[in-house]
Image (tube, rainbow, N blue to C red; front, side, top):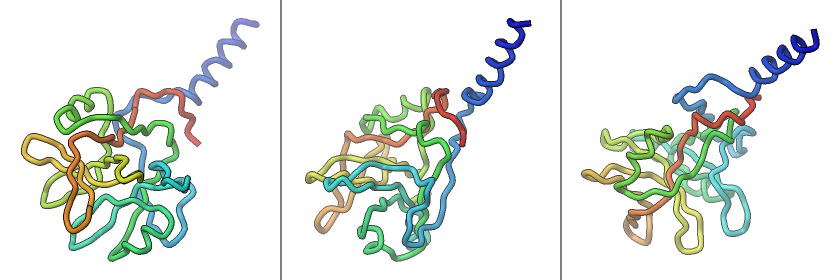
Length: 176
């Protein structure tokens, strides 16, 4: 009888912690109305230690990855903004990669889509630049995926960056 009780408790506890493996990310988008949603996925911190979040900005009929942090998002508002949210933030990671290596990550992780730009898939990347964490789009350029951020009067392109992925193999998350 003692063995049966322990075995039953193990199955119940195991069911709470370990969910079936799925490559489908468990994320969703919430509109930003001046207050960050409680389940917003943290994208990192700025140099003052304030949180930055991952978002999408609708502009000129296309969806553009953006970041939300303090006043920076409010200053950039030109359309509807959505914030990336999840119940399982521990399944999301920023993985160091480069423009040619990014496709090899897909065997282990799911890349998080940030929408489309001129029918090109866009993913989320980040890089430290000018002593600031910058979150933005990773675009397919020919055979390479490049990370781009606005800089001065143009764009700054990076070949090495971190990309946001969903780690479907992480079984240590507990769904809340």
